[in-house]
Amino acid sequence: MYGVAFVLAFIGLKLLGSFAGVEVPTEVSLAVVVASIGAGVGASLLLPPPDDDSGGGSSGE
Image (cartoon, rainbow, N blue to C red; front, side):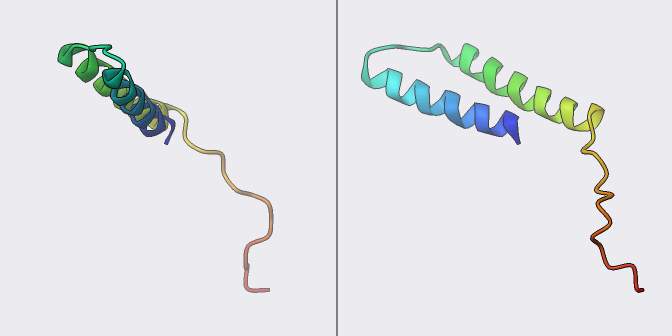
């Protein structure tokens, strides 16, 4: 989730920067996008969300 948000923010800043005359090379943009999505996927696999054991579920009692 955070990886996708970072990619969208980066692309938005890159778009705004292009109006101001700031040029970001295509290779750099691609590297940032791939690294961000890869880090997000890796974090999702290595750090699973905690179990929801709040006891509020329906247990059929």
